[in-house]
Length: 504
Length: 100
Image 1 (cartoon, rainbow over the protein chains, first blue to last red):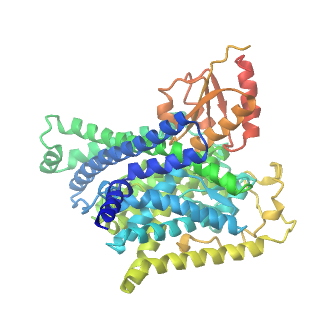
Image 2 (cartoon, rainbow over the protein chains, first blue to last red):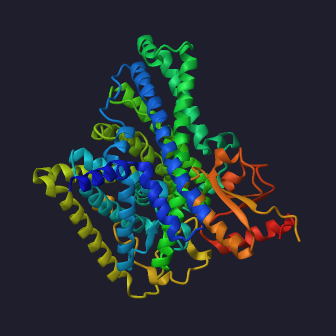
Image 3 (spheres, chains in turn red, purple):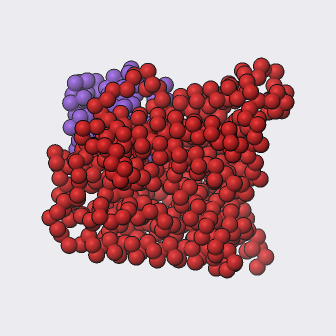
């Protein structure tokens, strides 16, 4: 008996608590399911494992750079740097090691929901966000239910993430259809709240007309095109802020952060800012490496068990519709964020860190959806919304995750905040119920999701000939080839208030 | 028959090199299989792509415009899952290079 227990504990500690090994096993299963040849299976599994190891190294470098950045900027404006008792790295090595299992189980539940309910027709395939959103949910659960048992964490986390993956493409679907002019794929991205606010907000505010004010009639100066490369824009913006901050920071703080470095402060600051950017690049490289092995398996499985469903894809799928709007959204988002950074510092609130990736993709998303409804003013508005959400989201969330992974606040899309806060809020309300609380959250979320899907299925079933309402849009479906199933898909999109991510 | 490199090295590019380019990679694989071309398809972000050598580069115009000289054949796409549209662009590009 004791031997058996030892073996089980050994397996738990050495396999199920190790993110690289777990991801390796999931990749192995995926490659075997796809019946890949032996050499591909071996190479793919090893690549997935090495990818995770690279990811953790990237996080380490990124976190180090972040600490120095916050300490120096804080000193420059006379603030205390934000503190935390844990880091993303600690979290991933501890309770966060459940994340790969949350993804695997959650994807199964997601496929089941899509299989059972005809209204849920999108299979979520944006791999890196499957990973990050699962971390957000796991961290939120651990933050409220400090010693939640691992099995509970996995099952509850999987249910929550599955509901999010199922509903999120649906609540942007009406806007997506209007933007793309077809319904071949959905949007599976954690900037969906920005898309909703940009789209419906610019309509409510009557910002302009999609056709006469179309952003694509403008030309932006070629000199700013370097911003499109996230590695470049992160390095440039963080370097500029860092060097400016060093000029104003107290020499003692700078010296402490330099930890005996022989460099001049400004040169050291530059190297730190570049390391920060490099840390993010490494982190992304690691994520890319393991996703390359896992996502095709997920797609293979969904194509096999759910033929005819549509993929929900990453945000750049909408960028070709309005590349200028992407840049407008990104720039306005960045300007607003930097202004917030100044305001927050001046009032002594908080030290913000510009998250260039999220400013680009979220700003681009706001730009494209805003432009589709109200032209370039809508694009500016979408970017502004993203900048404000990221600034306030970061300020609020840092403290909420200080016992798990506060870095999630500095590297987050708006949906991460929305979903995380809902889980944290529900958790805090239900915490007195003890061990049952996480299960109640999962159960309630599932019930709400199923109810939404049932209502949508009822509404969507009758084949009406009225096409999706598409008021004058830059890319109104008029000239686009109507997909064969378009008329059958009219779930009265615009008349229904967009379901907010309030269900998670 | 042709002097096409075998396997053909194809690179899918997007801004982060994670979501979109990976989906694009799967679409490219479908098309090349249909054309009967043996290929190694990889995907990456626009930064890393600059230091890569490939025979064919596929990505959004927004990114391919930054990547002159990475590959002799460059194909621009607007839709990442539409394999028919990709084939319609890839085929003439390969023919022009004398690879089809």
